[in-house]
Length: 237
Image (cartoon, rainbow, N blue to C red; front, side, top):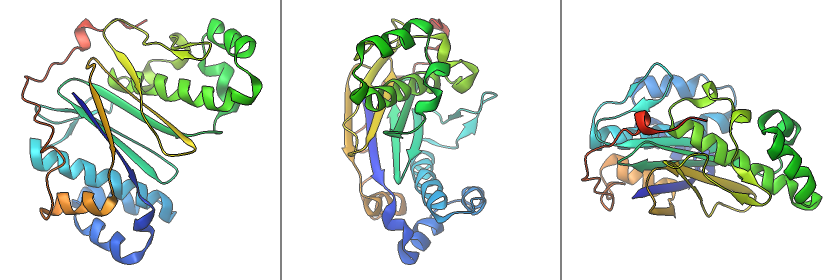
């Protein structure tokens, strides 16, 4: 089971809730947040840090591999953010998630699509739909790249996910799941798991969970199967 959470970070733009969330972070995560110039970026960083704290509290210390992907014992997880939302996914298998605001990055469309993908995009997708379809495609590609643990080491133009209006997983081992995202956003999660749940999680509830005053994020997510690292079995196009 893939468990996904989407959290609106905007309440942390007020001083009191921000201070509470900031106090729940480790020194290293505070340093990361402090490195951002603008408050909106600090808020996103702090919220992502709360999810990381939840992982460490339940599963143990997070480490980062040579490709920059974080890991914790017994769980696969991933974080993404855009606008004022943070998306988090966890599974007992490698997982990647991406959330993006619609209407961004259209200028890079040709550079991140395969030639056939770009040709079909122009031939079959109505012009009025292209911003939305492009972001659907982009979140699908980035979630796959993140699930593999490669990020942009796997060029997005090297594999195809978009066929007209339809998204398809680029290999037989990894499935793409489009999530019900907030208005104006698209979100996709990618993993070998077929079953997905996605909930909106208030940032106050996230803080309660991390502080011990609320239920653990993982109380309904008993990842009791052995963690399966499918990287060796995954076919990279």
